[in-house]
Amino acid sequence: MDHKHHRAPENHEDHRDHRDHRDHEDHEDHEARDDHRHHGDRADHGDRADHHDHHDHRPHGDRENRTAHDRHLPAGTAADGPYALAVDPGRAGWEYSALRILELAPGASHRLDTGDREWIVLPLAGGCTVRTEDTTMELAGRAGVFAGVTDFAYVPRDARVLIASAAGGRFALAGARCERRLPARRGPAPDVPVEDRGSGGCARRVHNFAAADTFTCDRLIAVEVLTPGGNWSSYPPHKHDEHRPGEETELEEIYYFEIEGDHGFGYQRVSPSRPGGTDLLAEVRSGDAVLVPDGWHGPSIAAPGHDMYYLNVMAGPGPERAWRICFHPDHTEGYR
Image 1 (tube, rainbow, N blue to C red):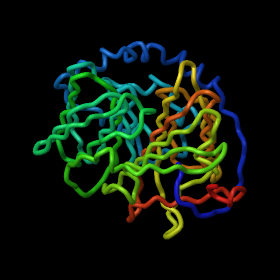
Image 2: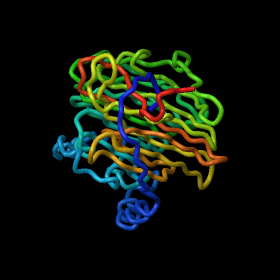
Image 3: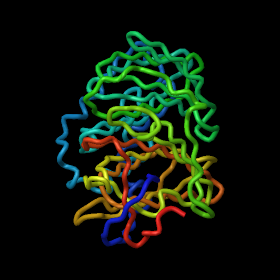
């Protein structure tokens, strides 16, 4: 993720985790993809209640035992019921951050029980209506993630939510375990801060729709980043995996990718910030996700001719909802 910067020492290693990981996982999971790949199969859950917290039976303290295979989720390999992607804390092996990608056919709807999490409903393609017990929010949405900013809906913990789409679409549900129950409300597209960050081959655009200093949540932080084809983002490498008051916040992070154009791809690097930490170089395509519980993450590299989009979802245990990062000691110059 790109944001404010501090510095911490560590070694930077280079380890390759290339497409052979994807090929192995694709062979093992082709039946799961066949079950969930078709748009209509996910989209006709008219009044289906959400029962996907069963992933949370996994222990949250096992993050050190995960491998690079667990950190990179190729499209379809983490599908579950109505969700093209379902990452909950139990599946990720952590405590707070969650992300689901919901695909709805025209006229379909989906019920979500928020449980102990706050959620943002973010249109990726198409619009929808989001209803809680006492609030109705109409989201105009957008044609796709490369079409600019979108409006979005915040829904609190301990709520029953109905998401309905007359024309159909694809929607990100970004969530975080939380304590406070805040009011449901709509985030208008014109209010989303848009930031052009970096320069030259590191130029990218950031939609700070739910950054820590732009939209109030209890623990959830979420932004979108658009990287032109051939450019790098999430660069220089940085981390946010320990609590150092005033310098760094501990945040679990999910990257969700979409790539513009047929056969487009990119790369995501995560290198260890501690012995046994996350070490990953993944070739990513549309629908892929990368989990970052720890480590120096970046760069995110867009292939020439294929713009890259990623959604970042973060949350952590700290007493302050803040986005403080430190750059890798080999890149202390920060963003330029």
